[in-house]
Image (cartoon, rainbow, N blue to C red; front, side, top):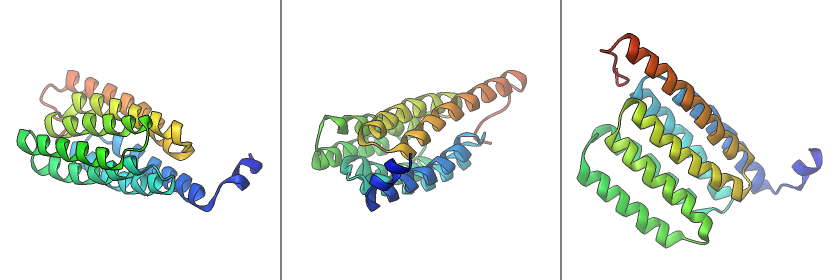
Length: 182
């Protein structure tokens, strides 16, 4: 383990640290039953992810992660607004095209598409299911680029998300008037 750490470049070390910071924000966000708090914590996590991807020189992932921050902000204000969602999807495609380096860049693009549709069009359990698919795509990207922190973060997002989905399901069964946006 010590040998692995000594072989990391400064950029890779900083990337790993950013991935671990993102992990903390992701767990706090997905463990939360309130959609608005989830979105705020996801903004913080994505700042750390964008830096992590930049340190790993995964430019498509970094650029699309910056757009994730914009998307979260817009989706909070314009929930259910198709034209803005479609514009955001188009911007994601243009940015991916401009930064594309390898087939691996398909993972962050798929994650961006899943996340955009989820945040603009879904709430509660469906939101978290589709965000889970986005997390899976990000995790695959992190595995390919070698980000331990990012892989752990997305793995924890998946686990925490599943637990929160179960919690929300139970709350909705017990209290039919419950809404995750509260």
